[in-house]
Amino acid sequence: MKPGNRFAVVVTAEHASSKIPERYRGLGLSARRQQSHIAWDEGSKSLAREIARQLNAPLVEGAVSRLVIDLNRSLHHRRVIPAVAFGVPVPGNEAITAEERARRIRLYYEPFRSAAFTEIDRGVAATGRCVHISVHTFTPRLNGVVRPLDVAVLYDPRRKREAELGERLATSLSAVGFRVRRNFPFRGVADGHTTGLRRKFSDRRYAGIEIELNQALLG
Image (cartoon, rainbow, N blue to C red; front, side):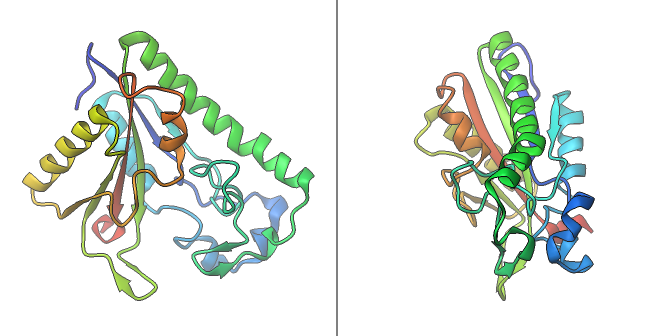
């Protein structure tokens, strides 16, 4: 998957940070909650950095917790500013004003999305096609249910070239011993950063692949 003249690669880590700015006073959550999986994807920053280094690709990292605003959701999504996260109420988000919503979009959401789009658009312009790798991690157990896999590879099976790339990646990871699932435990077509970008770029010009790593492998 090393980039060359055939295509460019851009790496993003939407949930790389657990940071909740001081002005939000932890959103009414305990310190433990603020550092738990409801706030970020633990390990995704270091994983994304390593992937970007290996591929000599630009990296765009989220700089704020998804509890403040979820950089991987569309603005119309009801959980883009979650009042409840993974079943946990977020008191500071229960009744935010339109002004506060606009502030979070302006300060955190738009800069991240704009930076990612700029890198992807630059890659498309330079080579004709960009592969976007969106890096995430997931908990090995959620609500008492064990997730029996190491890596999830998410893509849109309706986009021929993207599906081919996702399948090749999944097969390669399986070959070196990882337990891999395609589009599980999440769907590649569910609302997210990649789904929004698919509306902007054709399959010929853009492939959005999400990689989800089981946090049990982080050591």
